[in-house]
Image (cartoon, rainbow, N blue to C red; front, side, top):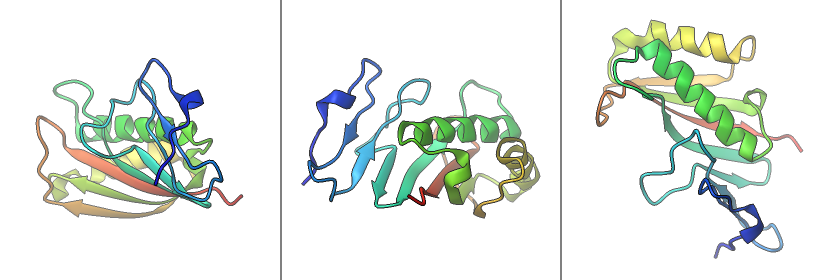
Length: 146
């Protein structure tokens, strides 16, 4: 059973759910510029100190390279984390789904540009099929250490 906290709703459509006691998972959706979920899921779910972030696309406009999409996806990830009072420094693991293994160098470059010296564990899985011109989707796990 999940409880909706009406104090956390905004005109952008993001929401945060939790139980009154805080013992159930806390679920949230980020505000703009992150698009609303296109299905029956939340952008993030947190239980205790661990937060799971749903897959994030970075294809903001047609013709973006894998590098540009990686940076955009990680910036969206950063926005989702911020809704839960987390940062990229809290990310302990990511999984990147890419359309082709030839994109790995661009994806790696994008990770370095956004994460800087922080190097969370990562898996890159080739062969993904996305709608439109998306080349990459990134999901993550973060730990608050609180």
